Amino acid sequence: MTNPQHSEDSAKSRPFARLNGQPHVRRRQFLQGLGIGALALGAGGALAGCSEPLGSGDGAGGTAGAAGGGVALASVPTLTNEYFTMWKAGGTEAAQALGLTYRMQSYEGSAAAQIDQLRSAKAAGASQVVTFPINNDAVRQMGEILAGQDIQLATSFAATPWMVPSEPGYKDMYSTLFTPREVLGQKALSEAVFKAIGGSGNVVYIQGAPTNRTSNAREKGFDMAVANFPGINVLAKQDGKETGQDTRPVVQTMLSRFNNIDAIICHNSSEALGAVSVLEEKGNEHIKVGGTDEQIAILDKLIQGPNVVAVQSIFGTWLGGYMIVRNYDLANGVELDPVERMIFQDSLIIDTKESAAEYKKIATSPTTGFDWKKMSRHLHPDDWDTQVALAPVDPVKFFTEDLATPRPADFKFPEALEASLAAGAVETFTDLYAQHTKNNPYAEAVKLTTTGATVFGTKF
Image (cartoon, rainbow, N blue to C red):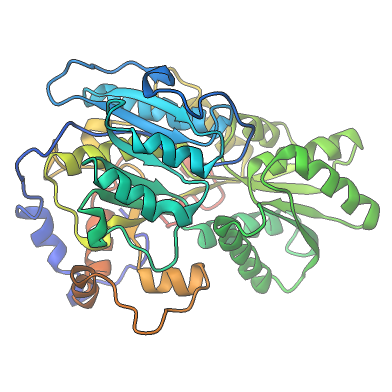
C-alpha cells in the first residue's frame, strides 16, 4: 500500500517491523464485555429518543447471548440523517460479526440530553459507547462519566483543542478519536471542482454551521485550494448551517447578487443538494457543484449531471463498523500506543460518472463488502487489514494548524504520549498502518476517479 503521509524509508520508521512481527499487541486479561458501536455526525431534525431507555432505541440484531457479548451503543444527534443510515449499516454488520447487539439512540441534538443518557449507560446495558458529540467541549465530562462505569468511549470528526484520549482521567477507556483529514480532503474536493471549470472562474463557498470546528477545518482546505489556483475568484462565503433547507435561500441570494457564478462548493452534501435544487428550478446547467458526504442522492446527481461534478466520500459505512472493531480490540487486550488514539482516516474524491456509479453499486448492495473480522488486531494479530487507510495524528500540528489554537503556556501532554511523540511514533505507526491497508470493496470506484487514488494517495 502507498504510505498515506510520506514515502521515504527513514531510519526512525524501521520499528514498524518489530511492531508488526512481535507481540506489541499484547493480550491482557479480558476486561469487560466486548464492545461497541457506531458513530454520529451531521445535522438534521430531532426525533423522539432523547430520554428513552437504551432498549427502546433503534436496534439491530447481534447475538445478545454470545459469550462476552454486549450492547454496542451508537449515540447520535438524530436518526433521520442519511449519514447515520450508512453508519448503522456498517455498525450492524460489524456488531453481528463480533457477537454484539447493536443499538442506535438519538439524543435529539442536545448535549445535556446526551450527558443524561450516558449517566445511565451501564444500567441500560451498554458495554461501550461511540459518538460524535454535538458539543465537543463536553467530551471530557462524557469520558469521565463513562470511565466511571468502565465503559469505553470513541469519538469522531471534531476535537477539543489540547485534549487527548490518553489523559489519565479517562482510565484507558477513551479508545480513539477518529477524524477525516478535513483540511486535505476539502482541498482535494475544491481542486476537483476548480479543474471541472477549467481552472479559473468565480466561486461561492457555502460554510458549515458557524463556530463548528469541522466547518472551520474544511474552509481552510478550500482556502488552500484557492491559493493554488490563481484564476479562481471567490465571490462570497456564507454558512448554510449544514442543511439543504438553510442553503437554498443562501444560494438564491447569491444568484440574485452575482450573475457570473461558475461553481458552488459546499461544506457537505446536504448543502450541495440544496444548492442543486435551486439551480434545477432555475434551469441553470452552467454552475458546477461539489460537496462532502457520499449520500446516494448526491451520487445520483453526479451520475445524471450536469451540475454536480465532485463528491468527497469519507467512507461512512466503514466508519460505522470500524469503530466497533476498534473498541472490540481494546476490550480484548489489544494495547494501543498513545499516538494511535488520535487517527486520521482516508477519504475519496469521486469526480467521474463512472466512479460514482461504481461507488453507488457497492453502497446499495445487500452487504457492505467489508470484512469486519479481518480488521481486528485481536482476531488477526499479524494480517489485520483496516481496508480504509489510517494514519496517526500529530496532535501538535493538528491543534495548532488544523484547529488554529495556540499551545497553552506550560502545557504538556500526558507523559506516555510525550515520550511516544519524542520517539518518532507518528512516523512509525504511519508506516505500520500503511502496511495493513490492503483490500477495499470500493477499489474499482477508486480506480475510476481522475487520480485513481484516494486523498491519502492510496491505490488498490
